[in-house]
Length: 606
Ligand SMILES: Nc1ncnc2c1ncn2[C@@H]1O[C@H](COP(=O)(O)OP(=O)(O)O)[C@@H](O)[C@H]1O
Ligand SMILES: [Mg+2]
Image (cartoon, rainbow, N blue to C red; front, side, top):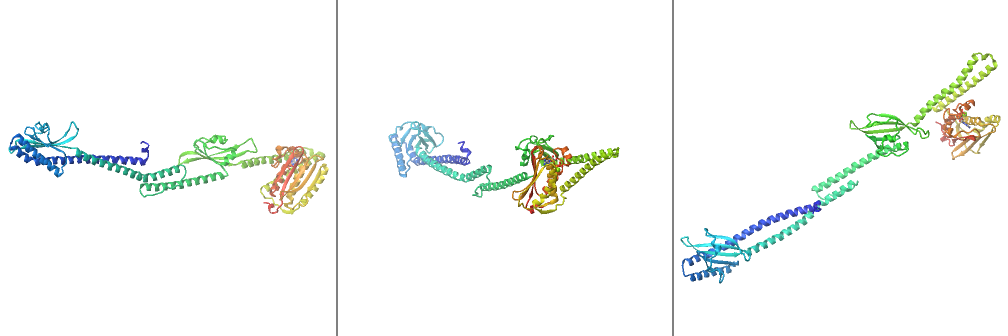
């Protein structure tokens, strides 16, 4: 029952059935009671009219004052006449009539040989005053109801001379009412069942679309917005279905717009060249992009704390209310992974005031930082490199001034030293100038096609003498049929001079230097200068191309080096779209490689 009340359809059925039941009951009760009244009035009326029929003839008999036996015979005759008339007219109700004398003793009865004759009828006694009266008598023995009618007989002087007592069973009327009630009950049942069926059908037209809407709402909650409720009518439910479809379409559009926005934002975030992190007002991360994770080297979970993710020197106080900038060093102790980030923290405000979090944009300024450091180092190096010869020159000049000039031998030696130092300064300055021109891309490159033997042979010859003096074997190995390259000859000479002179410088006597040219990767010529000299420790290898970097500063200086040779060589090779690198085994030997592209169009110098 309770379960049924959770279901609209059954609720309707139960409510309507109860309503019908109550109204049928009401109608039935009023109908039956008025019917009962009608029948009983009618019944009394028929009894009265029978009494009236007897009235005058009985008065006549009673006033004649004959002997009691004659009077009884007369009265019996009158009653029989009436009963005969009753059967003739079809008045079938079993009626019992008695004629009483003025004291209430039974004179005559419609029942043959009635035991009541001569006895006093006590029921008729009670009615006093009025001429006639009626009541319903319940028979104690049978339990049946009888309608009683009593009419007193009076002579001309209004003196009571007798009474007519009529009694009839109410059973036929009750039976009639019962059968009508039965009919009423039957038709009410049929009505009830029909209505219930109709309501079931009718409520289905309400509940079916409602069920469909419920189904769709459940689907929508699960994220499916593509279904439509069928609109079958134009009533409230039809309008509800239509409104629901509209709502679904609207939500679908809004959601897809939302999704689009989100995707756009995600694409923007993913493709940004900067790292982005956003946090809520407590500093918990709510948005981040891949870039940040790549930079810090591990994944960031949403909800992580900002200060646990970014190693900042000073903490940010939440909520942040002003734009704040900070530099963050990642992996400060590992030069290979070192990174410098510039972070800009901007507060996110909702409306005008409420601070809901911050957004941090992180840009990689490692290169700038490195360049800045290099620039500072460079300036320090240049100053140092220039001051050293200058100090030497100055001290020798002072010694000359102080009298050494008068000792020709010493003076000549001093002047030679000053000259060497001045020359070194000049070399240093000219190297610096060249580097600065290469840096500013102001160097002019005179490109011309040249065959590899033509490029290498003169250099080989130039160094042959020097090597012979140092007992170093110099070899030139050039593959035959090597294609021509397009290069600036003077600049290439400079590269070769520097690399080969390094090899000569750092190779002791009896060593070997091999100049080799081969074709690699179908479009490159690879030239290598291998020596069997001192070699270079591993840790210095990748710093050799830095300006002023020398493995052994003092030794390089005594050998006349500036520490700029390899930097210049690298700039020139890069300008030719080639690569340069060094492989070395400490105390075994060093090989410097560089490549030059073959195709002339790829060989353009910018
Ligand atoms: N063939 C080599 N063998 C050993 N060390 C070398 C060789 N070539 C270069 N180097 C190292 O690289 C450093 C840088 O070379 P470079 O730039 O030409 O400067 P410089 O020759 O003026 O010293 C040298 O100081 C030296 O320590
Ligand atoms: Mg050098």
